[in-house]
Image (cartoon, rainbow, N blue to C red):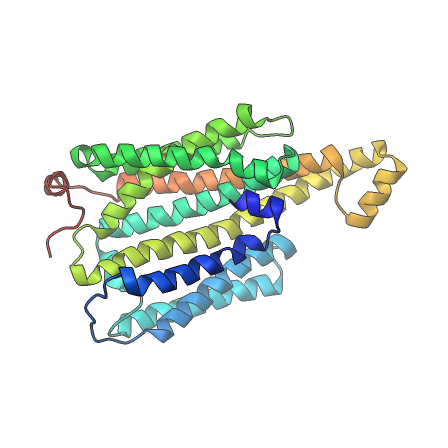
Length: 349
């Protein structure tokens, strides 16, 4: 649908299409969703503000570093501000009666490990979609609509991976699927690092996408189960909410890091290729280069591909870290397997 909207209408419709969907949900919710029991409490405004501002400073620091370098004063100031504000956030949450992020959730090693895995995997999957979209459109020449169809197999294979995990998880437990899923994701991303200007969709892109997607399907089921396992019913919202927060923060932070790696590798590749380009370029190509500052044609494809490959290397490192967390941190007891065989993912209250 994203490809259709961009191809036939305008990229702004990718955002605008959510408005009627949201309005429909607003109208349907009072009729179809039963109101849950209300509990007294208050909204942790200070925690919400400090967490949001801290992450914004951190993400902006990486984006600024990609543009201006690591010695830029605003880059360093952003990272410094992020450290201060996020430290303040932790202090606020420790003293709050009803924190927006209950820190005691991280005392359980399985839950803390689950959040760490989600953080790393979200960073990888957001980066994969972002940079593969650039590659298939700018290097392979796909239109937005063709790019949208090119990513359809990802959804199908994620469903297959999730189905396999759901079927066999009660027998083997979540840890094997968390480990194997992260390893498959790392293998897919490592495979993608081999892409170059001569790559094709069927020969170099589809295969690694399917491997990556199979691993992510396994991960989604097992991570959700582990995040909610043994959580009191009154804290299930906080536990699932934290998993979603890790996904959003991991995606934002990870993409900013990958963009930084992409920018650095692209600039280095461009510096290496400019002398060869100038020695062979026509007057028109030289004029275009002076106007835009970017290498045209296949020269620019080489620069883009070098940056994309570097981003995939970093994304693969994220998934390797996720696999190590799954191996070292996650511990599943025999009693956990017995509970899973009973068909529930949440422990006794």
